[in-house]
Image (cartoon, rainbow, N blue to C red; front, side, top):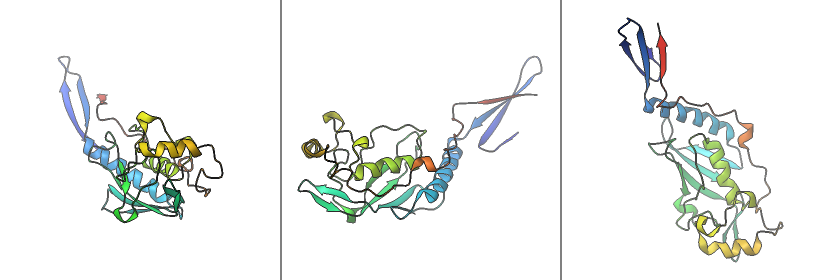
Length: 205
């Protein structure tokens, strides 16, 4: 019996009943997920968040340009453009993707949820989250949106930025640093849920 995303095993019971068990190939599931994510990202991008594929299909690396004003030092010093690289690991979606600064775009935002080395601290991750929503959350930290900022000491990636955040977090003239309308995850179609590798389909004939 052919399977689109794996192979099947046939078992014959003592009673003569034939049972087919579909074994799902995780590599095929990842391939399908990446293709779906690519299509959503191409719909999501616009002049505010530009997304450029950096690898062949199924794409697992993107350059993301956030044309958003951010703060890069406590003086504060502002910047209008931040370029990042999104890298999708082999274990995706069970392993979280990584967003880090393009070398030419350093330093990172002076934000409690950005490591000073240039990597975004994503907070929490579940395999159901789409890359569209992941990038959207990242953009919200770039503009210092209070609703997307976790300034707890244990959760902070840049503890040196906590004092700056606490001193200014209630200033609506400062935060968020950019008032542009972002493309939203809600405008995209619902992420297609992929059959989990551990789930089996049994067919009785």
